[in-house]
Image (cartoon, rainbow, N blue to C red; front, side):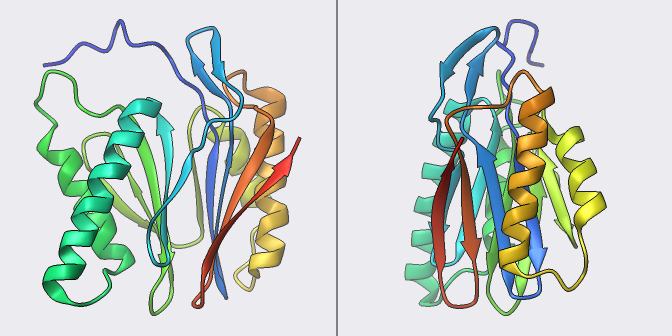
Length: 205
């Protein structure tokens, strides 16, 4: 088994919100290694397919490697099957990648949100050994997630729109930044996914 004792602690806050017309993902941009702020402009939201994106919390290098791996697998799947992969299909692929590494010397130390829109908006969460769960409303990962989840719980409604969810995502992440030492950076990134497109915008702090 692996020993996590000497792994540097990392902090993050990411959120994902299901809306009636799409999905909103959000993250702050601070990257830490223990007590060192490694970056204030770290990217934590990654498009991996036409209308699918992934957020990364945990060891940033592991997350980047997984995103590259997943993109290649999705491209291969779409070439072989001549069709776009579904959100659930992308999440299952990523889950299998993580599960296959569970007994290695040091598995991927990440928690991920996979979100997108095919026939409907969808969010899946995946833990470090591939545990996969579909979320029906919202979710948050990272060291700031307990604070962010409180804001999401208080503000969410079933008829929420992408525009309104953007505001809630920003509020949740700002609340986490105020109280979580591992969250911060120079901006908040937002990824908005609808049935028509995916686009990312940044809000400077």
